[in-house]
Length: 182
Image (tube, rainbow, N blue to C red; front, top):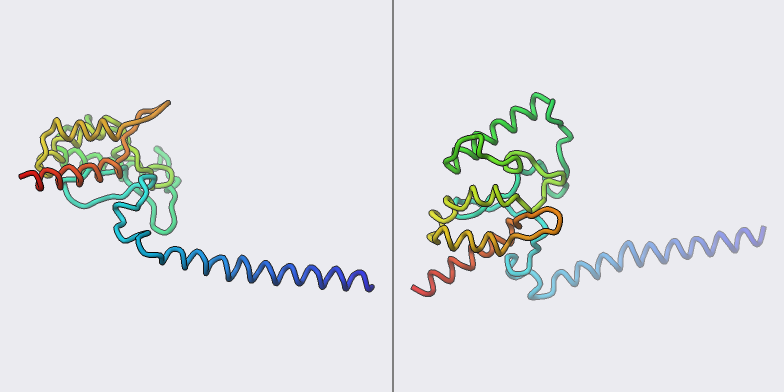
C-alpha cells in the first residue's frame, strides 16, 4: 500500500506541475510575447499570406468564396447534387459575371466554389485574369501593370495558382508608389 501511495503522490505532483506550467505559465508567456511592440503594429506588414484576406472595393482581387465563420474554418459538406448548393453556386456565378462584365460561361469554377477550409488564399490564373480589367480601372494602374503583379504572385509546382493576399498587398504597394511619384 505504501508503494501505491508513493506512486499516487508522484503522479499528483506531476499533474499539478504540468497544469501550472502548461495551463497557466505557457499561455501567460504567449500572451506576453504577443503584446511586445512592433509585432502587430501594422497588420499588413506583419500578417501572413497563407490565409485569404477578403478586401472590400473593386481595386482588390477577390479570393475564393468562403464558408468559414471565424474563428473556425471548414466547408459546408454540401455536394454538387445538393439543390441548395447548386443555387448558391449559380447565384455566385451570376454575381461574378456581372461584377467582372463577362458572360457566365467565362466564370471559372474556383470563383464560385468555396475552398475546403474557406481560408485558401489561392485562385486560378484564369480567375485572376478575369479580374484584371476591374482592378486596373479601380486602382488607376494600367492593365499591363496589374498583369505583371499577377505574374509576380503566381507560383506552383503541380498546380499554378495566384496568391490573392500577396497580390492585393502588391496592388496597395504599387498604388502608393504611383501616388508618391506624381
